[in-house]
Length: 170
Image 1 (tube, helix red, strand yellow):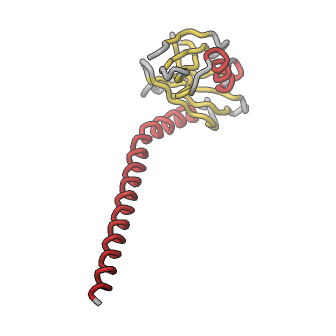
Image 2 (cartoon, one colour; image 1 turned 60 degrees about the vertical axis):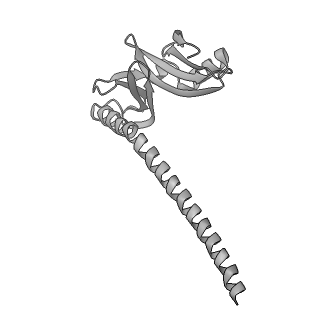
Image 3 (cartoon, one colour; image 1 turned 180 degrees about the vertical axis):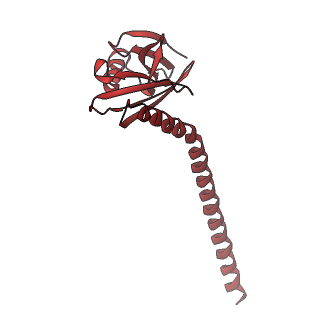
């Protein structure tokens, strides 16, 4: 009888350790999800703000894509359609309410600029892309990792894809 209670005692301790381990694992996962959610809040707030400004100004009626790009300055941009069903982009610098509006058919699309970068520099991974202003001209800014795992930054003019700035091997 004593032997039987010892066996059950060991199983109980093992089970409690397993349950404690699972509980700790779940708590760590919940904390991670919470931290990621908090980290995403500023971008969500900016997206809501830019979308609201673009819609209130009549520049956009719908938003299909939102970008955030940060280098020397932070830019937020949204792409969508206006009342005439034209594809329009709006660019906002940081916390400003001033919109720069572009007709997306007047320049390169996100897909075209990705293809241009892939053709020219063969990146291992594109880490960010977004519309911004460079010397008051609309541009696509991209950051990417090359085959040697170096971080790179490149800016293409929106209208014609001309490379206007490049910082390599950061």
